[in-house]
Length: 490
Image 1 (cartoon, rainbow, N blue to C red):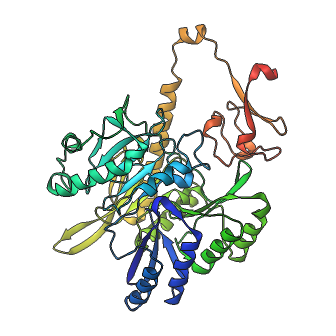
Image 2: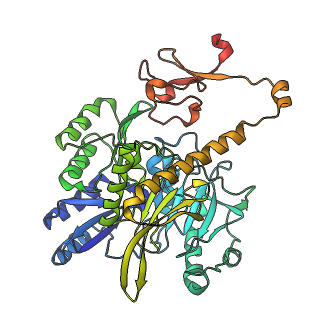
């Protein structure tokens, strides 16, 4: 298709009713499939002659949209992971929605609103990045990434939740009014930016330390999974294409089962949370009706590809196939594919396309560089080149070697953490704990792991996936209770 319509869903929250009406409008112009983008928005591809009718339908629905441009990038958030992948946090659904409702204008800079206790939603791919404080309820770190640069500046103040909309708008206006100083400028000065911000009427306080950004740990985000006494459904499509008939059926079933929202994620997938046990069979039937495949390999799910990029998708499939042939482990890594300059890709390891000859519009000899983020953390903005100028035929092997470098790095970190002075070990007795299932009394011991669920020895209970289940009775992770080994006579 020659054109793409971008429809933003603030924070990745979609009303089933709004989505259903958009899908009906798309069907009027004979569109069969739609996609979701990296910034949690809907993408509709269409021919030029269909633009007037589709635009008219969206205007009737009062749905804002852009065609072939992204002058108003979506506000993205970690809300889709809330309750499912994020626990023990003060940042609740109500707080997210209060912030979204209070932002009463449409930003032209990228805004990210994220919990600090997650890596499912990228934290620093925005220009204005709000990261919830892990220690002060309703206070936020503010991290600026100046537009069209990788320059990061973290404000030394924490900002109260209610002031996020006001500060976001003020920061955007300062940057836009001084574009030469802050946009595409390697010398952009964060101190100067915040000196221009009026703080007299803001609820702020000094940050005791910088935001603690977690190491990347991508949860398995597809399938029908239990949490608490409910289920969540994650749907991934290899070609990123979602059938309109399928999405309409999802909207209808949400309405029938009184689910008021669908979430779209930064991984171009959708999630439905809050599915009741009594409705589980209906959702399974829907998946069967449309032949929706589940449980793709993890080394496929952890790729990030640019929006509207068939070339990137083809390269992803090529690399996934080769990783699968070699049976390469990629747990804990996010692999990005970048085919365009200035595009934003979240990755631990980045595959970047370039041409050996690129002069006056002449581009010849396509090659690929492999770059690794600092400490392999996708939230870091600095990268080092692992391998440069690779033709496509050797790219899978070079990617495999970069993955091995990641595991060498992890092994080094583990060895350093394991070095404890002998005197300390002798003087301090460490109490050991296990986790006991409340339903069947079986025990998860982090020292041993869980071979039935392919959990390696030494895996802490806290980092088990949210969908972890007891190997005996299939009770959820929340059913386990921490208990001293000595209390069980172990």
